[in-house]
Image 1 (cartoon, one colour):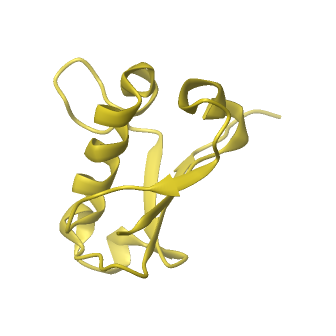
Image 2: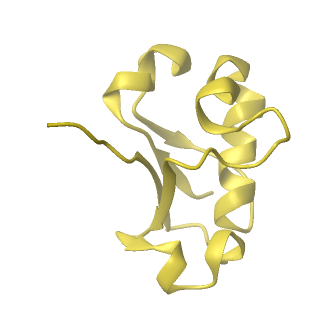
Length: 90
């Protein structure tokens, strides 16, 4: 099963776990699996229409999925999917 890593700031919604195993064969399915396991995470990752929020970026093995096959990037048993939130400010 792939491993999902999330920022510590939202680990409050995953019982303080910043990484855990998830099911899924794509990066997006891995995130959806995490939301099924920890429903409170949904609001912070997905918008009201079920799409990833604009400031959420997915990485597979430290490579932005935009450089791979997008959210449909295939993930395997040993892969790490990371959720990163864009930060702005000064």
